[in-house]
Length: 388
Image (cartoon, rainbow, N blue to C red):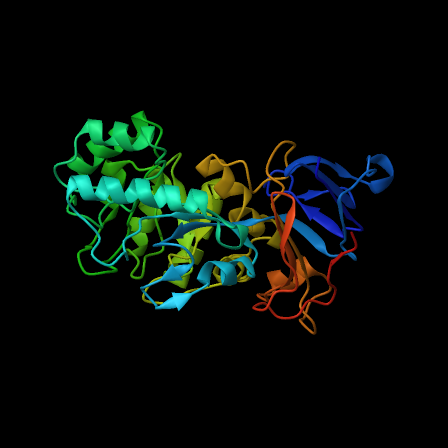
C-alpha cells in the first residue's frame, strides 16, 4: 500500500464552487486515490510511505487544460518544441484534454485514416504519460462520409472525445448535429470550434451553428483566436443550459471577461471551464491556465477561490473526470502553491485576485510527487518539502 500524507497545509481549495475552501491542514491518499482530509489530529497518518510538509502553502486539485492539440509524446511540430507538456506541469496542470490532433503532419482525412490515427493517439498517450500528466487524446475531426458505425467502432476502441467540429469538412449544423448525436450515443463528448478561422481549412462558426450542432463543449467561446460579436456570445450564454463555456488563453481577453460577466448574471458560472488552445500559432503556454485564473479573477471580479474552480472542478464535472475535485476516491492529483515573492496582496488568493500569478511549489499525480519548485512560475514565498 502506497500512502501519501501532506501535512501543515495552509488552506485546501476544493474545486467546488458551492464550497471552494475546505477546513483542514492535512491530506491523506492511498494507492493514488484521495482517502481523507481535515485536521491532522483527526486523521490516520500512520504508516505513510511518502510525507510532504506543505509549510503552510495552499493545496488545490491539479489544474485541467480542457483544450490542447497534442500530436505524439512530449513534442509539438506546430512550434517545433520538445517537453511542452512537462513545462505545463510546472504551471500546475496535471490533466489535459485533446480537442484534436490537428497539427500532425500529413494528418489523414479519409475515414479509415482518421479513425486509425484517433485510436493510435488514444493508445500512445494512455501508454505514455509525459512527466506523469494525464493526456486524454485521440480526438478525431469529423469529415463528410462518416457513418454511425464509425463512431461505434472508435468508442469501442477507447476513443472518448471528438476533435473540434468545424476543423474538418463538416461545416453545416445539420450534418454536424447528426454526427454529434452518434458520438453521444456511444459515450463520446464533443467540442465545437467557435469564432473565426484559426488554421487553414477551418472557418467561421457562428452562434447559430453552435446552437444547432449542440456539442457538449462550446470550444473557445472567447475565440480561437477571433471572437464572435458580443451579441452572439451573450446569445450562447443565454440559450445553452448544459454546455460548457470554454474560455481559452489563446482567445480574446475582453470576450473572456464578457463571458464570465454574462454567465454570472445568468447564474451559470458552473458552466465556465478553461483551456489554453495550445500548442497553436500563439505558441505553447505553460502558465496559460494560471494566467486565465488570475485574469478572470482580476478583471471579471470573481473571487480567486471560485476562479480556481474554473480550472479544475468545473472542468472535471463537465468532462466527467475523476480528477479536479477534493472527493474521496478521486485521483490524488494536486498542485501546491503560494503567493509569489514580493507580489502585492496579503494572501495567495488576494494576490491572484489582483491579477498576480502564484508560485507553484509542487505537483502530485496519483499520489506521486511529479515536480517540485516550478521552473516557470515566479518563486513562491514558501515551498512544500518532501520529508519521506
